[in-house]
Each structure stands twice: as structure tokens, then as C-alpha cells.
Amino acid sequence: MENNRMELDDLLKKFHEYSTQDTTVLEYAWNYSKEAHSDQKRASGEIYFVHCVAVADILVDYKMDQETIAAGLLHDVLEDTKITHDTFRKEFGEEIYELVAGVTKIETLKFSSRDEAQAENWRKMILATAKDIRVIVIKLADRLHNMRTLKFLTREKQLEIGHETISLYAPLAQRLGIFQLKSELEDLSFKFLFPDEFQSLLAKVQLRYVMREKLLENFKTGLEKHLAGTQVPCRVLSRAKNLYSIYRKMLRQEKPFEEIQDALGVRIITDSVINCYALLGTVHSVFKPVAGSFTDY
Image (tube, rainbow, N blue to C red; front, side):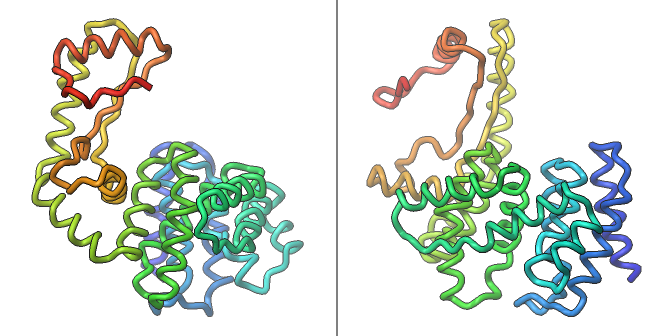
């Protein structure tokens, strides 16, 4: 009991780092969900409530509002317990009810196609079903924790969920601009769908980029100094290409890992086409472009 209290305190502390909202609803949602799922366990053998907390924790990492985090704690109550829609609505009000009901509705959609065009139709259907974009964010957090614990399921289930994740949910995360979540969903799917290829590529990446995060940060800092002198409004984002993106590029270009050039990447974002070319000129004056590798979109 003491341990759970500490977990709740940790969650509230993280939430208060970016929000001044009163957390009475969050505390009530925590206790309500814990009680509702008290007799349920996950495939791992853990109590089911651990999953609800993990989903809420992911939502706090993305600085979501209290209602979304509360809905994250409660996201399986309508689907997996005996609590009725009417009872739930009376307990938590219309906003949180709609979020949880939206996640529950997505759960009823059963995706099985291997066709990309069909997958795009399903993604549109999920977006249309959700109404509130926060429903999608909760669902993505739910899927991320399920992927992190996928090893406890049968091989058949791993393949089914891995395919659904890489076809539906990773592209949805990308569409919402949640790139870190998208990358983790892709890499976890890759790990279960193509385990040999995943392990082989992971070993090569680790060997080649032991210092890749540090290297990237240093380059980004240097680039920002060069761009600061231009007076052009911009922001610089850096990223180490995730494993699945590298693997896909290897397949597309029919090249081995050693010949993939942009496993580390920096993105400069500005507000107009003219400014884009102005910044590109500055970059090319400092860093010489590699012949044959420049693309003007």
C-alpha cells in the first residue's frame, strides 16, 4: 500500500513540474482504477493496474492535461470491468468519459490487412472515430506500454500486434508529430517481427555510434552558432535515425548498413521558403555538400 502511495506521489510530482492544476481528479482516478482492476492480472503475472500507471506515466512525459492522464489511468475500465457507462459518466463527468469511451471504441476496430492502402483507410477511420485528438494520444501511450511488455505473449500474438503497431500506430504517432514515440513503436515492432535482422543491425549501430548522441549534440550546438549570425528565425532539431528507419532505407536503396549516410540527422525548421534557402546557403558555406546526395523537395 505504501509503495503505491509513493507511485502516486511520483506521478503527481512529475505532473506539477509543468502544471498548476488541482490534482483531486487524478488522485480519485488512480484509486478508482486500482479498485476496478484489483482482481485482474497481466500476461506477465503483474497486477493489471501496473499497466494503467505506466500509460499515465507516458502521458505525463508528454505533458498532457489532467483529464487526459486521468483517462489514461481509467482507459480499460469500460472495456475490462463491470462498471457501466452510466456509472462511469456520473463518477467522472462528460469530458473524461468521452476520452475513455473513445479509446474503448478504437479497441473494437479489428485490423488484419497487410495492404498499405488498406492500412491508410484504417488510420483515417481511427482518426474519425476518435473525435478528440487526446483519445489517439492515450491509445498510443497504451500501445507503447503493451509493446514494451510484448515478450510475455505468444509468438503468434507478438507478430499480430507488431504488424498492427508498425502499420497503424507508428504512422499515427508520426502524423501527430510525436516522433520519439513513433520511433520506439517502430523499433519495438521491428524487434519482434524481424528478430535476426534487428539484432544484427543493433550490434552494427552500437559499434559504429558508441558516441553518436554526444556527436550529434556537439554538431547541433556548432550549427546553431553559425545560424545565429543570419538573423533568420529557425529552430534546429537533431535525431539519431531509429533502427527501423535505417533498415527500411537499406531495403529501399539495396545497400548495406555501412553505406547508409544519414543515420544521424539534423533538421532546421524555419517559417518560409525564402528563409529555407537563406539558411541552406549558410549551411553550404560551412559544410560542403556530398556530390549526388542533395535533394531539393
